[in-house]
Image 1 (tube, rainbow, N blue to C red):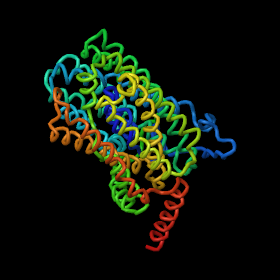
Image 2: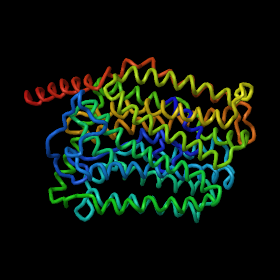
Image 3: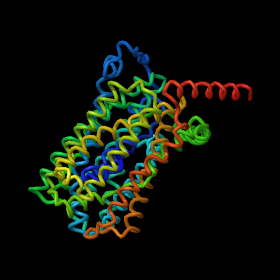
Image 4: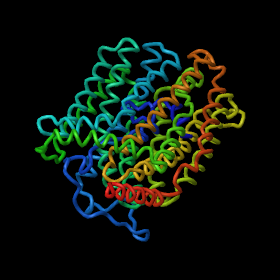
Length: 499
């Protein structure tokens, strides 16, 4: 979350991101999925032996003989496209600032509200599970997502001339990415349940490593191309990426659903009650509340973009360079977590990564007041170094949350519960950016008046450490989560047997 504060400082990043147009790399990481029980692609019950990895011979990534190549391809490619979608981040910022002439608070509000589709991901899973299209529950929804995303970016390139139509297009472009992302995260959750914390960590590192690679490519070309083409031309280019989702859908090995859809929908209604009962368990509700609060602290939003362009006069090419450095270091953060912290307890990682991120985040005040120049550090060099450090810390802070979310899921409702947990996390991110936008407006910060910007930076960074007061709500480690869930499930089964 420390990088989440600074994340908004980089125009090419998002809310999380992950939102499909790249206005925030690390919030993207927090947005996830909802799938049915069993295989998220085929819709069939999960088969095959589980993977066992010992501490002495754990590879960097799970063995492929246990997980088919199609698993890696589908999950990694969807996340790669999510990272590649960040190529539009700078173009969106320039378009709203220069073409539509909006204020920093308005841009932060519009972009964060456009991330709302990531807060209702369980809905997409229920729709795909309960309402097959031509007998298929996965492929048609992937195709719809691809067509929707392409259509929205095409409209951004051709028709958008006001903030409301622009918000409409970004909202549904974000929804398209969220729907397609459902499959990738659902597969990972289904494979993670019942396995060790280390195995779950490796799977998360694999798919988010693919996202980081896409982010690196997007960061470079997102800034480089803007020096030669208009923002609308970038939107047209971005319309091509979601279209490839249609091809991925054609290759997905899904069998036609031939069961009783009425009974499936009846079971879904019963699952809603089970999900609510599971959320009320203290071992789930407390960590869920902590994750929500960690994301709900105020964020600077798009105000950094105005500071970079109006005060420091950075060009689009240099902003792209900052994003490239951040994206490369994000990949480094993912690999570092997967290699050295996969078995580390959750609490120390969250505490130290948040505290260190806050300290480096406060160093942004040196940039705002120009102290770095007195120290002999140019603005550009200072921003590059800060981007590198905060990007690594941001992913190290985020990965435990993803692993914890996967480990909190009770048996039989893994994907559903994972979607609920991540939706609550995403809602916290949306509210955090909205709080930041409200502060921006209250402080009178505009595109030509950034005198109180330092107050916004100070509040956003200091508030990050407040949720750490509730760190006791987070399980000490992943094995503890599995043990607690197993005990609760045994008690539930005993009660059901007694009845």
